[in-house]
Length: 287
Image 1: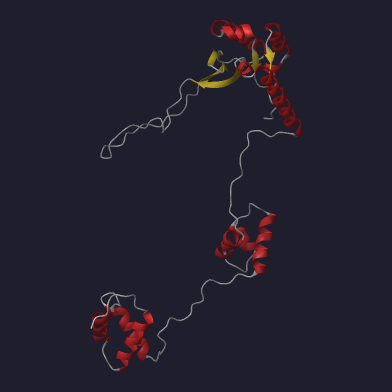
Image 2: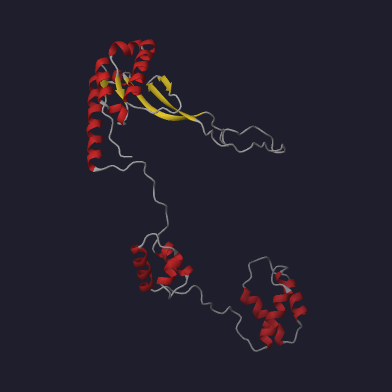
């Protein structure tokens, strides 16, 4: 009689094998009777033969033997690994194995990740390093900006003109993201040759306000920015504001640029005072 399909315990099948083996049944006959009662998925002929040999050799236990499992980790080892790691946060597992030789590298990794809940992360790159004086100057410039905004509200934002310099390459290749095209899955993938940015470049001064770009000035190749050249750029910017921002021209201009030498030179400051433009204090930064 075949039993209904239920999950059969391994020890039950092994007990049947032990009983039939004691009666002198051959492994093939035992396997046939097991399939007849428990179904095709009970145990294959190879395992039936193995258990018949073990029972014939004198084994009487039908349950699995206890296994050693993972080795236990003492609290002293955990403390030693943590202390060694704290002395050098960038230490590698190989060096930890040398300093803690009583356990293997895999055990040390388990201690760090599972026991101590540590993970190795990269340091965060910062663009600027600020001193206490720079931080205080940033607070003061922010307060000054908020005071101007409290007096004039959104109209103050319409008066701000910002400017900065950047390198403009003669040729900039498109990125992989920009080269994406619509294709079917069966179509061949498009290919492009890898290109590098052009070696030739020029310095460009870009000025903009809340509405968009106001003025772009390209310098001649081989020239550098100084106070005189920056003053000439400001004069061109003044004409651009007069032509494109009539309301700003009548209400006043507030210039905001960084603290590069040409921007804070006496010549530049005197010229801005002649224009009647307000200079917004730029937050100090350290390169």
